[in-house]
Amino acid sequence: MNTDFFLEGENIYLRSLNLNDIDGNYSLWLNDSEITAFNSHGRFPMTKEKLSSYIDYSRSSKNDLILAVVDKITLKHIGNISLQNISWLDRNAEIAFLLGDKTFWGKGIMYEAGILLINHGFKTLNLHRIYCGTSSENSGMQKLAVKLKMKKEGLRKEAIFKQGQYYDIVEYGILATEI
Image (cartoon, rainbow, N blue to C red):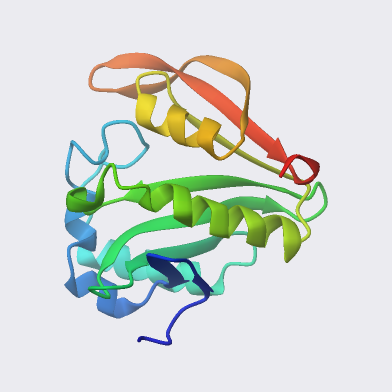
């Protein structure tokens, strides 16, 4: 068993991103139109140099906790999850998900990762609220948010431009008292 984990679940563990991740499929995920269809990635080409800078940033940021999602059986980096835009004053953060390895889609991986990170955010980081937003077209992310006990909080009209048109962003949130 690999011991390079930060948070451990039944099927996955979460760890810091590292420069070795660049040698895997990580950079390919961010250039794949199917993977980036509903998020802010895929608008500019991702290069190994940009990814290296991002990994360096992720390891030193005080307001973003960006973690690799690793399959415990294969020890393969399959995605990322993060608490970003952490406001220590307001005690809230945005949770973001990226499951880059399509062979793991539909298997509950990000639900497991989400539970780990939400619990860490509330119980260790003393956050009060965790929120996310997703394209109105991203039914998978909307189902995940609800499964994670997040409540629909609102709608930002035509807030994201993807695939040649504007889409609404559906907002979800959960308070520490609701878990």
